[in-house]
Amino acid sequence: MFLIGLSMLLFSICSVVFCVIPLFLTGTLSKDIIAYLMPFFAVLFIIGAVGIALMAVGLCVKRKIKRTTVKVACSQIEETQRKVSEFLRKKGYKSITEHGENVWKCGVGFLTAMKYIKIEFEKNNTMFVSGWVRVIGGNEQDLSGTFVCVVPKKQVMRDLTELQSCVC
Image (cartoon, rainbow, N blue to C red; front, side, top):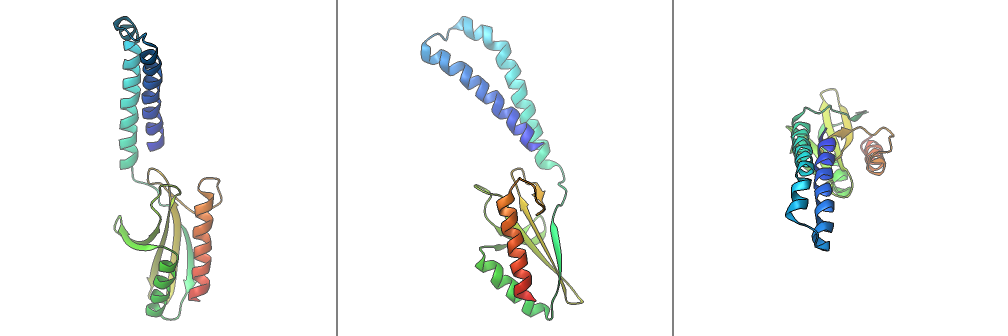
């Protein structure tokens, strides 16, 4: 929904810009032309406003959690936590709290999707390792093979595999 709103907003802005700039540059922009184009601009304004509303709704909607989770047996929880922290720091991940969860995050999402790994321990020496990527608009995507974010997904999957072999 966020992306639909963003595309509507960009469409309305680009339409106005590409309509007005050529008229301005050629010197043919007059009050008559502006009066003629006002209904067109009004429609584009409404499209842009609806786009902004859809972006706001898209940011507020509760997102589905889509994560790839792997169960790993470990011998000692404290030692495993130390190994996990050391491994993830070497890979460029930083420990953060996001939406009330302690997760490891790599990247800022500017050029590629942000990569996340979450580690949870149970009392029976079992560790659950979850991995996902987050794309524009904050949507989580598990590591299954779609064409969207394929490179970051493969990187997180490789990190999960290496983490399993490092800990076990």
